[in-house]
Image (cartoon, rainbow, N blue to C red; front, side, top):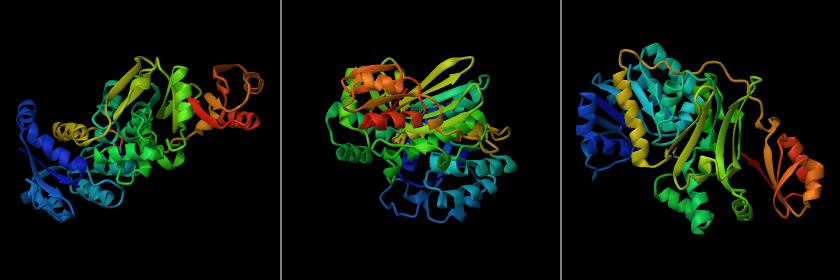
Length: 393
Ligand code: HSE
């Protein structure tokens, strides 16, 4: 019997309890071990919950119970969750989490405690919701040198963009829908402003290249400044606007990561990833492009990834998974790396060509430049009086 404890009975914690209940027999059959949720830690009362008899408010109870082998941290944030994760690892328990903020900002420390104590600290659910992407990255793709990771990493903003574009729903209503479906963060600013996707691209980058990129060291832009006019122009020219997280390691060794809205050509598989779905492309120097697709948020999808880590931690009791990142990465600001840009204004294509070199004309007053740095593009945009400037994948 594998005894686990769940810390935090919100969307994810409740989803984990439900997956254990729903799939108890098949999990036991596949792993040869039954899973028992022994405790659920939460400050709130749930008198009507079927799990009422498992509810505790004192962390010390699960910390000091030698029967509890794996602790699921689904509290969120980096305060209480950090303290309890440190203590659970120190107590010799495996910890699995969906908490991208904690992994992105304190992962280095927590992984080193896990290593010292000989336990696992696993966080598949912290990126891509239910999509298995981290384990393939550090396991199945380990023979590759990773060149680029790019993807839709936030379900809430992708849901909002899809509802606005395809359903004609206002931003505020689409956000409310995403909240009611349990997709959004407690403070949805983290979704809307690209911070959540920023934490996720940092975690992917850390695992891909073994060096720590902290969210505060990268540029993060969300979807609040996107105009429907640009969505329309892009669509007519064969592009979709998507919020992307992107991490690159260039042949010259420079490394960058950032989050920003992009025009994505319709023939790129990411362009058709809609609603709460995430789509992540990883480019390895041997395999080429591999794409991961699935539900990026929600209770059961996220719980699916959490439980895969619970079972993986149990399978690696003796031979812990040695994943981690050490020294800080040297990050080149994304704006210094030449990329294509979309500009829209009331300028002529000739003026755009004069300032930007060769351009692709999307419509009157809307062009895509060749590869330019952000400073070069801003300079051209200013001279052209452009009203919109977006990256192009
Ligand atoms: N708020 C996040 C999202 C939850 O919308 O993607 C999953 O990490």
